[in-house]
Length: 71
Image (cartoon, rainbow, N blue to C red; front, side, top):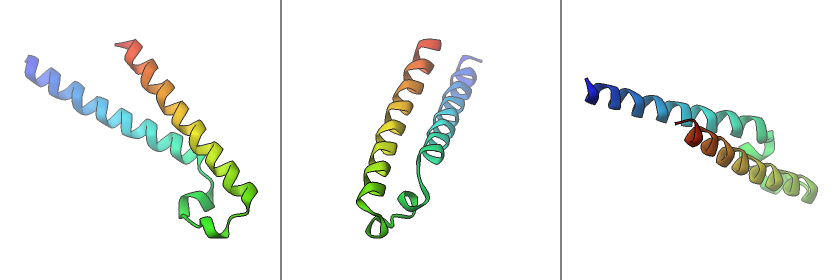
């Protein structure tokens, strides 16, 4: 029973982590940044996309920390 519980927790943790990451990326990324059309972006759009990626990275770290503290 312990092995089954361990496997279930591991799979659920991976799914939650993947879902959180995908949600943060979708909320933070702009259309041009996701399409990889950096050559079509103005310098201001590039700066905003870079800031969005940094903010998303910090949000993922905060989510990871909060999940770790909930254990």
